[in-house]
Image (tube, rainbow, N blue to C red; front, side):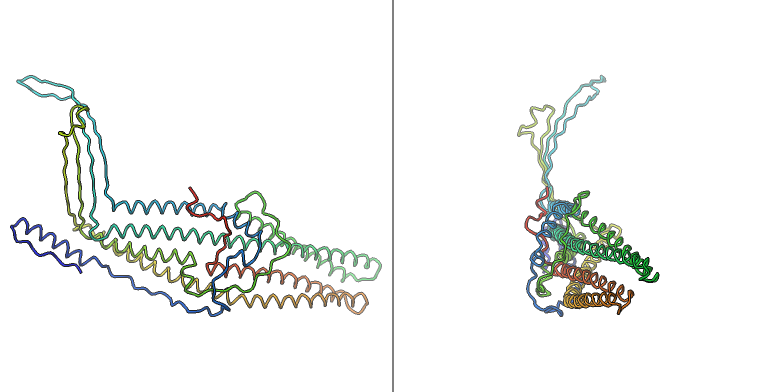
Length: 480
């Protein structure tokens, strides 16, 4: 608690000094503690509603066991211009923190001046002129006594903003790694879809050729031949669309890897199966694992420090200034001790009227603190929603994949049966073509479901703040 000093009754001069100190301290007592921004944060659940286990999430490279993917992520982390820009932002924030902290230290400046001038004087009615030299050297030291901690708040805010920028870098690195994994699996699926479409086109072409030959011999009707040609055109259209997607996925991965115009490596011919369901960890662990939440929390604390600084900007300031130097009309005498002069000045300044600028700055800082609090709360809600969404989707996507596998087996069996019935004359060409379309559609849907399951696993790792980057990652301090 601030308590004013008693008045010293030893003369009017001391009374004035004591009264000034009393006013200063009383004003400081009334403004030292700004009204804090009330925290309105969402409640953190004790467990996840859809989690099978609550243990730490493993790294992504352990979840998929794909060495090629690990190499691609490492390459992308090393080549990404976005990450290099994030590293540059860290360097800028570090310099800003140094600048903000420098105000707490004494500011020392040195000066050395030399002048040459012609002067004229009147002596006995006669003008006498002459040219002379004048040299002056000096050192000045300025220091503000951080009586209320204003400069400390400024320095801590800049340090917290630096930490938030570093957390942004880690969030960007995780996002890049996740995008590489997504594009890699999309590329694998796109390649499989192209191969499937090619087989479909080849089968349809063979079917059209067989039907055309039979039509010329009068075995098949024109309707059957026309239906086969229509199916061939549909298959060719699907092949073109899937080739276009394959090219697009290659270019996206190529850009993320930073290796344009060099193409990315050829993906495997099959999609990997995700490992067993990963443990989710406890909800509270997100606060220390997810870099975006860490950055939001740092910015919340930095905004609080800025609010306290803005409040204390309205308080009086005490500054000390010490200066010393020498002067001479001859350079060789500039360093002589008997020419040394010095001064020591202490001053107190207090803002009285600035057009409402300081009060508006205080209100602005408080509004920024409220905004940071709301953004942090929204980031928490978004993090919980992302985790719960991925956790709840995981078993549903696994069940969907199992169902489509059964559908594919049934489609294969139905296609064989329809083909045999047609060859023996017990079925129609239309039934066989429908069975073939169902077979290819089932196979395509299964590939899509496998990829969706992998994509969800990536989303879950990212939502849990899991590690995506293999050994050899870039650290912010490694960039010079």
